[in-house]
Image (cartoon, rainbow, N blue to C red):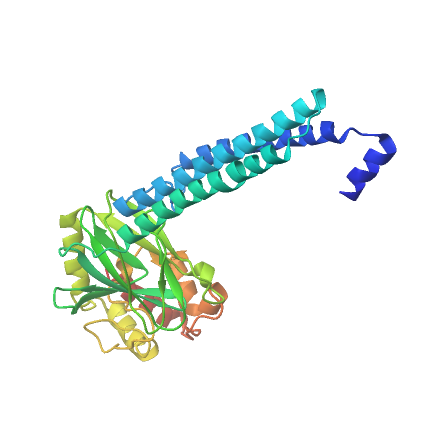
Length: 355
């Protein structure tokens, strides 16, 4: 600013001319930004874009977002056009508004119109929030999600509230059926957010919050903790897989069953290694491993990711995670597992059999 004023004084730059050019640049920047956002809205490669809704609740959120976006574009464009008109007309025919005209202009354009626009947007936002927070239909699938530093425990409940299946970091839901989600935290404040399916809901220790959504299309949708919860907050993700009702029922039935007994000698040795080294923290139903400090690994081979969607669930990644989890996610509660190469190989064979 000081340089600009200095140039005006020394080079006699016309300030109105310079400001009019600045206004035109702002209008151009607004147009380019609008084009970029329009392109973003059509880019289907973004798995976490709230502009590609896959549930009825997310569709309402997207509609409100677009209303706010275009309202801001119209207001900004109108202000810039008015500014440009004033600067250009002022250069040709300088004039000064009367005190009464100035006051009316400020009251209408600076108070009345913004108050009406903001009231309409706030009202729409409150109505949408009330709709999302409403009671889910009675036939909704009941799921309880607990946030931990830094992974997700997902439990499926029956009509009596009893747990029928437990998994981690991967939620399967049926399409076109409401899913009621109880949200809890085991340690610090987290936030449950699947941009393509629903809005953010906080998970507060000692308190149960609720959310629900109805997926309208099949697919895989990435979720993310939306509340900074510690060192590895950015690596606290999960996956929601929406599938047809019959396919989901088969999946849930498999998840509710205990792990099958290992068939090969290597897998049997791997089970022994697991019970001796991992069973204090992890649980595998049907074995002597009954730990509850870490994720339930009963059907770990059926999951698509490891370490809260940090790694693909492949043998090499699993070996690296078991050997040195602190290198991949520093600060998590899992220590290094000191195993011989043969013990690690047998353990991987056993875990690969848990589908």
